[in-house]
Image (tube, rainbow, N blue to C red; front, side):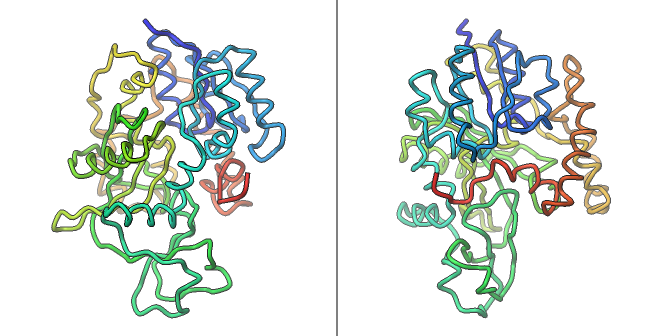
Length: 365
């Protein structure tokens, strides 16, 4: 069996917990690192050691991460959250010490920047909503359109409006035609342009306008084909996640890309073994519904009717955190969630607070 020492950064993401458990199940030694102690991996009995990192924008972040990799003799580094954009800036240096499961920064930014991604899509004749730079649009639009930052996460600062605030909506924002239809997402593991594993899912419940907290796996050949095309066209390596809108007539529009880990991993944790060349235990996931039960309960007061309407799906879903052989992370969700809720009072909400020290918004690195 091909066993390795594997380090995850962005340990605060619940999906890291699932990936770490899977890799540990095949006798790999798994480590986790983050710039906050408020993460579930800290309490996971499958994680050999947790490392506290400086915030990504501090000068000693790179030095600290490389020191950990050298000291622990890490074989594989897997970034998971938006720290990936900072790590990719010194990926060549990191590759002197270990394999890094992400691509180079220019490629990541082409996908993550919604304006450059739009230009890429139209150049490749892939269907996508007509998009404009907000700074080039009139203050009053002739119809309601989507306005959002070129760099964002969890649908932050996204508005459907017919008015542009010129003081706020500058060149860092885009205006996108509104497409009516159902939202789909994809998540893929890719190496050297080849898709190792890909799943498609829809979101039943969200944390407000943000991340999905009740997901349903589905199938769509068009979406898989688009993912495979982009992966091959860019000769991409790493994690690829796309958002789509599918209209009533079946037309699929590509909306945006997140070249990092997402909650879609819940449907294929076993397939995560493919990135280390391990073909054992690659059972297809039997999970059709995935949930973050605590998050559903937290957001229940804000969306009671929608939650009750989907009670059957909630009951039938597999919780992404619960594992009877590793119970502490499940119970530690409560104090960790309280921490982010309190911090969110000062940072515009818990989801914003949970990413503010690692988010990337187009800064020069």
